[in-house]
Each structure stands twice: as C-alpha cells, then as structure tokens.
Image (tube, rainbow, N blue to C red; front, side, top):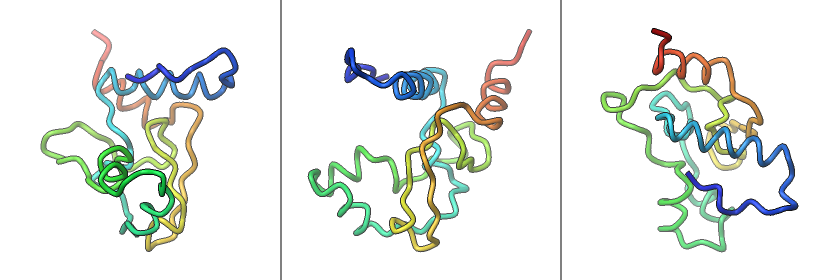
Length: 121
C-alpha cells in the first residue's frame, strides 16, 4: 500500500480514489489490467514512449500492464473497465483502440469481488 505521496494540497477526489484503490490491494485485489480476460493486444512501444522518463524495464515492472495474472492462482472477476483497481489505458497503447479512464469509485464488480472474498457469516 503506497499512500506516501499525499500532501496537504492533494485533491480530495485523488486522495479518496487512491485510498480505496490501495485498500483494494490490502484485501486481495490486483490491478484490473492484470485480468486474464483483458481483451487487449499491447503496443509496448507506445506504452514505453508514454513513460519515456522511465527505462523500459521500469515501465514493464512498475506499470503492471503487460502480464496477466494466472487465473489458477488468483481470484478474479471478469475484466472490469470500471474497476477502481484499473490503471488508465490510452487507446494508442493497444491494437484494439480500447481506452480506460481511472475510476473514482468502486464498480459493481469490485463490490461483488469483495462480497465473494469476504462473505457475511
């Protein structure tokens, strides 16, 4: 969980979104772009170019775009472009032209994942 970059001037909506996202990790949710159901063929050159201030290795390690989770080892829902756990995706970063904006709230599938992972007694 990384909340160390907040400061007194952090926008309230950014604070809220990031806090919910990071607590999602704490309860077992992975980044949504790791979904084995993600219908994207990455344009790695475009992603690397977008993060030109990082090395390619740093982009590959830190952006979490290129490697899906093993569906046998991770509980997951179907791909959810509205998930609070999703990083933004620009349409030029993939061959399908799919664009995903960062969500500011939990989606219905996020809530279903939490309910299934932590059912009421």
